[in-house]
Each structure stands twice: as C-alpha cells, then as structure tokens.
Length: 113
DNA sequence: GGCTTGACCAATG
DNA sequence: CCATTGGCCAAGC
Image (spheres, chains in turn cyan, purple, yellow):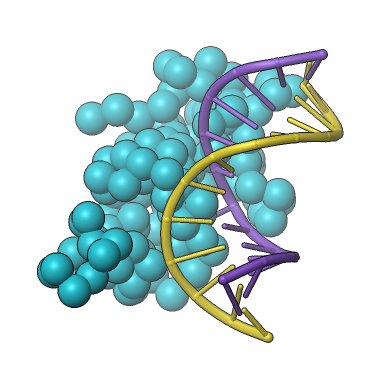
C-alpha cells in the first residue's frame, strides 16, 4: 500500500468488471415504478463523484448476464439519457409520469431503500 | 503529461 | 426552463 500513493481506497479499481456488476446489482434492486439516479448509485457504492462512471457502466449493460432494468436510472434532474428513445416509454408503462422537465415529482418517485 | 470524451452534478444568470 | 461554467474520475490517444 505504501508503494501506491493514490490508494486512499480502491479495493479493485473503480472501472473494472467488478464495478459494473456492483452497479447492476443495485439497479436490479430498484422496484418497478420507481427510479434512482447515477449519483445516488455512486454514493451507495461508497464513491461519490463517480456518477459518470455509473453511466458508463450502464452504457455496457447489454453485456449484463441477467436482465437489467436500466431504464429506471435517470439523472439528478429527472431527465433520461439522450441515447435512448424508449426509456421514457418503458417508465411510463410502469406508471412513472413525466412533465416537460423530466420525471414528474422526482423526489417522490426516487427509490430509497 | 496534456487534451478530449463521457447514459453526471450543482450553482449561476 | 435553458445554457454556461467548473468540478468530478477514469480511459484513450
């Protein structure tokens, strides 16, 4: 440990296959009709500030072994990714309502264990 | 080692 | 609400 100056933490590197699986594990716990955010997942992982990497991990979610409700992850403002045109539809099908800004009453819809 | 890019975040005008 | 700005961390050239 003393040989590695930047190892104030990091058990196995933030961006590793293990990291992705930990992200996916949390996403799978989000109940139907609820959402969570990239930043919240980062915090739950014990790494505030890696919200972008959570997003990056989800960009590879097609490689996930098991089905993943990736559409339940939105940004802190309640907006959805520009990369998908069906995310909103999937959420609305679960009862999540939208307004012009994004998820309606986000605070009430966000999942918190 | 610097610059760029990301499914981000928060504050500001 | 939108755009901008600065910050964040890791990867790739």
